[in-house]
Length: 320
Picture (cartoon, one colour):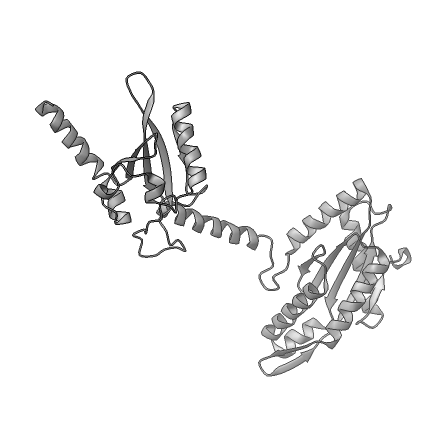
């Protein structure tokens, strides 16, 4: 072997051992022919212990069936193969060097399988390149979490933790269109807290906020998962009841009214009871849009207010 070839090989080895990625070369029998310094440093397994050793015998924790199939596809198709940390978090269980883990305990890895061909174009070896993707995974997960919170905040009322008016009304419009197109039943409850301004004026807004939170917790406890509660505005709430007729909606409303009437809110040494007035309506052929349905329930709610509060009223056309 000439001096130039030896120098070239030494130069190549110098590069391979200093690049910040893992380099592994295996043959068709899965025997290891190269294990660079990156892999040595992160696995604490020296190269001399691995040369000519079966990859899966040396690392039995590898996903043998999946990874072997991936490797064989490169030998057969003579093309690159790739897997990212999003598909499989890691191949080789190795620690990362981040002082803050971001919830990630093991180095997240991108893996590239490269065919190494001979002069006739046949694949004799495969180079497996392992790239540390921990930073990318942490930042992407942080971004996803932030976007999820942002998306949630656009739908959820911050005080009561139920749907805000915009999203709740959007859900109502969707359900309205669905029933109009495919049939079925749909009922709506609108209610508000009796004398709520007096609560705020007498005890302060902190107590008033606690009453609103207690109300939302109570209605969530009493509703089905398919029902849709929302804060319509101030002390007024709406509840969308899919697949529910008027009689069923009145039963739900009366149960909520009774529970609210029996509840006691404690805040800053203040114990306070409260009541609600409720209006209920059911979608009929005469209702042209979801705004009309809200108007009907609001009309029935106003009737409950005129009737002495702390009661439930069903909408009737003569109320208008």
